[in-house]
Image (cartoon, rainbow, N blue to C red; front, side, top):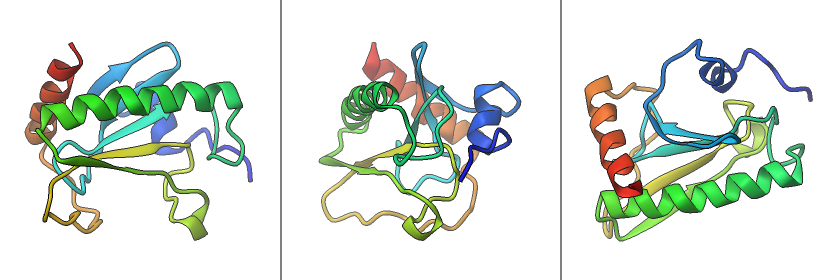
Length: 139
């Protein structure tokens, strides 16, 4: 499979679609998931073009893993979470929907299940507030 330059994350990286950024380096972008499965659900992506774990360059994957840890610590602290769920899907059969490699970082709380993936968009002001909290924890 080839990389699709018109996937939603590629458009976000080019500035064609908005996002609520929480963390950015020369190689990485992390932003709020617009359909969160829990409070503080962040997506972490490389700026490099890669469809998924099967074709990402090792150096890009290493930077991505470092960023997942940084964002995970901040999201856990920002929401006083009990733990984290980190998810990464590969190809349609593996549950991948957007074909640009990404990790889901989701703060978790004892006894609270993940919300189902309904496709319903969260309100922008709610996402902005969650992003503010995570950025403050990164500072």
